[in-house]
Length: 547
Image (cartoon, rainbow, N blue to C red; front, side):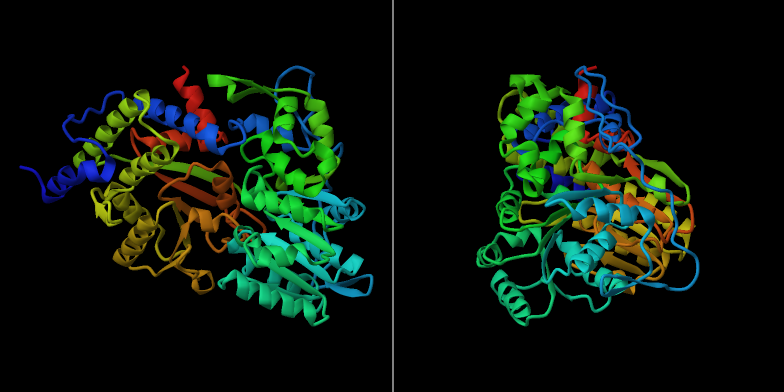
């Protein structure tokens, strides 16, 4: 006898997922089958949406670590180094102290590595602060503005950072230095008018705008016509796609600004090729203005249609050019943070969800091999597989149908064990946020949210904070909690690393525990394995399928 949910799903399976529901469920070999599905799909997507295949954990660490040695001249991944490490340091003890930089009174002296970073970027038209989260990048920018007496500053950042970070940074470190105007939540025309009014006041002003809106008319044209003293590109890895609209706009805008600074803790989150577009907006003399030539010089292409980076070359040159404009600080070198622990809690999908997952997997493989998959519907089907592991399917009208509660039950048990202590639950999908609120209410703890639809961070002091990982990976201080639960995972290593660092940063006084809820034998395990090894998902799955 079929359940009502099963009847609904079978009746709508073609409309929901474009598949039939005739094939019986079989658990054997499912993980291997998923690897094949994901490998074929993500390889295809990589040709359309990425600057090159991802890079392994060891590669990225060697590239960005000041402790790494020089390259050995072969085709291995380049190792980059500034040539010296930042100082191990702490601010002097005691109450708030004041110091003066020029004629500006600053609250608290900077750390030694911040002073060194300031010296590094001060005499360069374009420079990068490649400093880990929590090591004080924004403080260096405040000191730069104070030292040089800049009056017109444009700060570009992800939307979540615009209002939540920069106004507070100037107030905290240099109150009264300049007016800070965060522009969010209005039309681009209204933002342009507000910015023009602020600059017209004659007072020193910093305009803070998000990347996704800066290029839109009329603001984009207006900003291009201003004489900015300083352009700050916060979380500059957001413009790493050379063909992106925001990335190309920043490249043009930077030509009109005398001093440019990029800030990021993950300059090469997925590949050494990520650095090209960021440097194009900083200093075009370093890597040039052609991504094709840049890739040909530093990468060796191979694989299907020679569209995959199989190795890197000219490591020493790439390293030296990178550090000619980048000041690197790793948190382990300058911060004394508590320990971390990562654990996985496994659950088994129910029979209906397992069968639907297998049906979609089988059809996916058949369609890929038959050439019926496009870039758009491939990504859509990948997301639907993840949605199934979260316990729901989506109808054509956008309605979510719950098909499984396996993860929800694990979350309930975990929250019950934690009690009313603050805990962050990261999710990928909006539906998952609703589940978190439902479970929190069931166990009797308050719940709050940070996502595209709600911003409750200031209200959260106990209970659960549900965070959509794309919104919570940047600009948030989540050190109130020592537990982070990952209810669902994304494919971005950068987003995952950033979200972890929001708890494990200065201000955290307890060991941090990261808890991942994973559905056995599904995409969850594949993605988690890649993230745990600090490999981007695409690269990891391609290697797995090749075994």
